[in-house]
Image 1 (tube, rainbow, N blue to C red):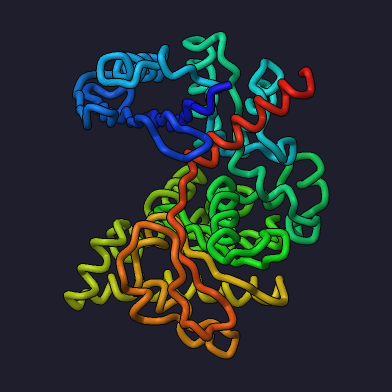
Image 2: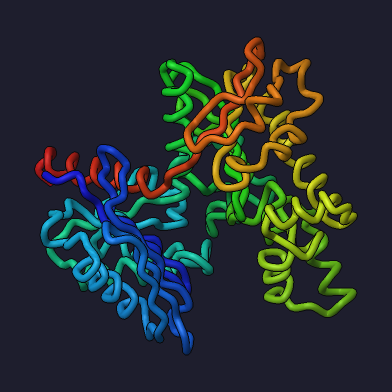
Length: 403
């Protein structure tokens, strides 16, 4: 069987794809179609011949995926020549039903559809991608890889909210957690970098991109995570508020007459760094801070302070910590954020080496002081590779079992 997996990540108006060798992690080609359904869309395909960009209307996700298939044929590599083993789909919310990747069939589609109320912004788009891919690649096995699956190892005391018991029993209101593929990948890479068995490691992993979350990982399994029933809870993010007094919602309804849809939109798309400083691009925020911008400085301080609080909390949860792992775009690229977030934690055995931390590198590395009891690692995440690996393993295990 080939090791190549076509990884598809479908958003409400976008389609990201990558043809990944699951054994090596190398992408033979990748691309992104944006602004699907709008008058003018954009398609970028990067393959053996370089990058080509196209601007036209993409009427639907099927139109976008067909454009991707055409790009493989005209710009390479040809999908017919590669021999794809599977199509791997990122699905945001698997609820409590899916602790592992699963082959796509009508039953799975129905189950993910039932979970739409838990992820109304994400699951419908993920389902659209699955529907289109099944139509275009009817003979290929399709695998759903769930963001929430990694956190299905949480114990009831960690995932249960202190609300009426019927809310969980009848409506599934509990902590689920997200960024699971990133956590799985970063944890495995941390063990490799440390030269130790993942089963014996306690890790605090910080996935810091436009969306941000933290996880306490013991022996390769999640024991707690900052995101909750939705990706809104936890750390300060690019446009999401993170932790917030629940009574703020009622206050806004009473005092301003806002609807719940208005509040939901504000907390998901107008809050976080954007709400504090008017800017959710961390690079621009850093430039403004350097120029003495007070709002940018406050946003940075709030962001780092929240990270420090979660590091302390998860240190207590784990008891001992072998490494703190920074991953995703901001986690990988902002040395100042890493230093500020961990400053003052030397008594916990956490000490960053300034020269290591500020050095530029594209590969995973340690940025902690040589004598720091707790390693501090920077690991570039590769969710596409992780999805490809999980999808291929799922297909092969199913074939092996005769399913």
